Amino acid sequence: MQSTPNRRTLSPVQKRSYNLAVSPSTHTQSPINPLKYKLNVGFINARTLSSDPHIDILLKELDSCHINIGCVSKTKRRNEITVKWKTGRQVYLGAAEGRIGGVGFTVAPHLVEFISKVHIHSNRLSTLILKKSNTSIKIVSAYAPISEELQESLL
Image 1: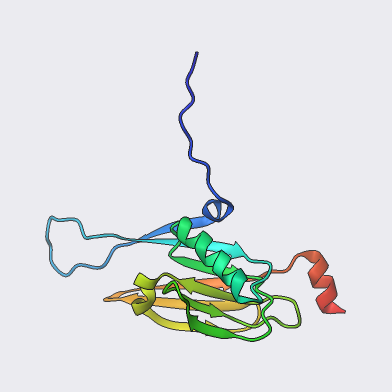
Image 2 (image 1 turned 90 degrees about the vertical axis):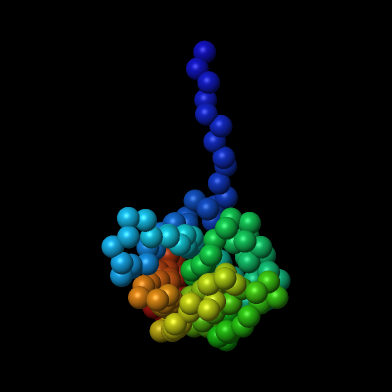
């Protein structure tokens, strides 16, 4: 009888997240390996973040899954917001066009100091740039509609 290994069940957010390890550049030729900073990025189709309770639920889920940066799409917000939330997370959400689209980011409190620039280009595209020392990373949050919404937006 073969035993199956214990497998941890993952939430939907954990299944769609990626772990990026960033190694800072070193100027010395030390035999010691440079420290690595773990950065867990999650991509979330929120369906709606039109009210504060919806944002609270999303941020609790991101914290429970140890997601540092959440790339959020389909927010359906009426207007753009940039706010430091009660939990310490920085929230950047762009406005939707009508009830279609809306993208943005949520950033964990320990990474807020490394935010260099956040730009909401349109209701479908936003970018976040983080910088630490000589290392920078650009994260893009994009929204591509499903075919039904595409047909509605073209009418």
